[in-house]
Length: 330
Image (cartoon, rainbow, N blue to C red; front, side, top):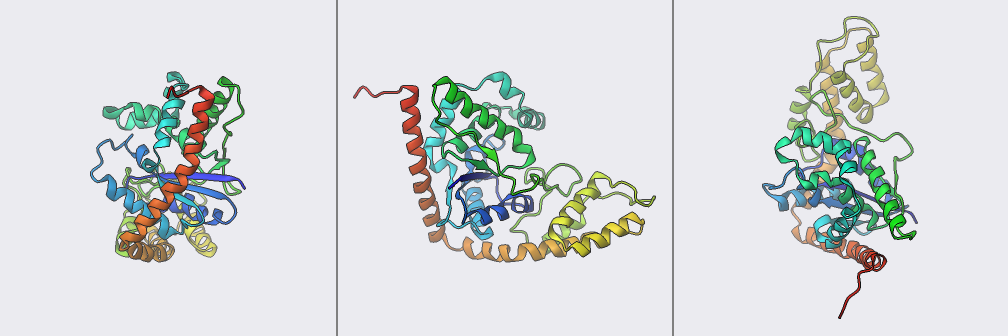
């Protein structure tokens, strides 16, 4: 059975982009693949080195993973920092990662531009930590968004380099899992880029109905088309992208036709989009409230996930140490 691995950073609530772009598909994988899903609290420190409440953020993501349908009995659902072997493999892979290739990584350059006051070593070596997360469980496939494709290619490179340097065929070269279609990138409500918490342009699975309506009604648009069949601006195209994912085909066609003949009212589009998003999120939102009350269940899930993940990770670290040549003198 092929192994699939994916993780989400623990910077708080999961947003609609996380769910539509990844989590709802994770749920479908659980019966057919050996799945590892983790909460990337180490990764979160690259952009939030002094988090206000790391524990609360991790707990929230755990609750929402479960509410979205991840089954801890079918999959291995764990918290990254509960598996210290990840940090050790990260260190070992860093020894064979080169400054120039890390500096050329698109994600590093973008983050360095956005946070020039915090260009830390963890940010630079983010692809190495991501590689450690993946290869420590010998993952065959990794569901990734378009913004992470290059980092997955780096993971393949590090796996291949390890095998070459130590003359072994040990690590697999993980491939992207795109669910049979192009990798999905869910846009934000601010008119540019993808949906994300740090960008402040997202709809969260824990948002109540009024909050969702307010966020969508404030979404960036433009003054509207003045020429029939004119090309959409990026903000409007972003709204239609979300509409196409959450709404019925007839609804999408109706608003596209209105846009093309210059009669569209963005207010009506946003109201419909808000109601369709609410309909999609409501069952998850209700499960979030129920699971959030059950501390005993959350502790059980975290412990089970750590045990299952460490069983795999400790075996890898033992074998990697042997391959490199570490031997005890006692």
